[in-house]
Length: 502
Image (tube, rainbow, N blue to C red):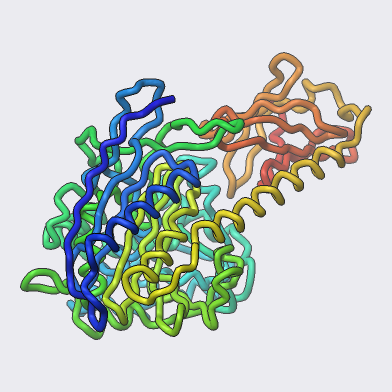
């Protein structure tokens, strides 16, 4: 497949604090490194911007917006819109900080004051849950991404169902990433200001910073210069469908470009200043970047190589030490799309990388390379090290899949005729699954949102692909009651009870 490659490169020579001026040669060598790294990771397209001392020193688009069979594939440039995904969280936190500055909210206000419909499994946690807790992933409630991945329900229904989610660990005694609580943060903002989160975000951040192409959700985009998500399906990288605009937009819905996001990076590095104004009071900006809790090493595999002395999470920002300096960063991931923002405050250096390939961990390599190249020095090849790390993880996943297949018990059959497995299965938490028999296989419909076709695997377990190939394969296990009838369905870790036939 041949593609047209027309990158846009913007170079500015600046004087780095306590460093020699950054030369055109240094810029060009960095450009070469970035392009080579992108190709090593097979990422169709990326956009990157680097800011230093309040100025953009490098920004460029590489590759194409969408892999096509045409030789006229559209190139990525610095205006191409990509998903910010979970780097959106810092923007939601900033909006909340504005409300703190205006005396309309306090970080330690009880959430129930603004969102009484959010009830958790433990009444004590419901009473004690603070605004701050919504933002630092310490509530004890594990991931509830099934609410967006396997169903299409409004945010208020998500909040209502949270009372059914058993905690994964004690309140404020651990860390597990939680998107629903950032949705709750967005709803709190809406209750206070009387506007949608999207409208308020445009009014209070995008417009003042001049981020005029940035959209709070993909549905707001009326521009063709937009990337497509990509996924590796059966060893072939191909474009996939966009995901739906989520009900939890305040957790990760923003779309932006290298040009626009540069303004956000500059603002966050300079105590939220922009032009002749500022988004936040200095003390509020400082509070956002104060460590609030710890995150575990396995949150990011890169920590195995970096080996930082400490790892914390602020209000919407991961943090760790690197060469004696504090790093504030956050990744963003949607199906087929990636992002990362990294700030090195001591050096007034920041970088933002967009990608259009699922979990393109090239983003981590480019962040640390930027820190070294434009501030801290060193010739460590982060790209090669991280590529080796993730290749090893991919091989481990392949081995795990082989072990799964090897453990299949052959020459077994389902306990009952296939027709006995068909029917409606329901759960007050997970919704509804409809099971039908089609050509000697089970057709699965989960909440009219995801679909899969499963063949018999062994005993009362069935296995097969999702309709959306990039989701991989699903495993379903049925249990039989003492009366000899199908009782429950356990699908991808979710339990459903079979409804009686009237």
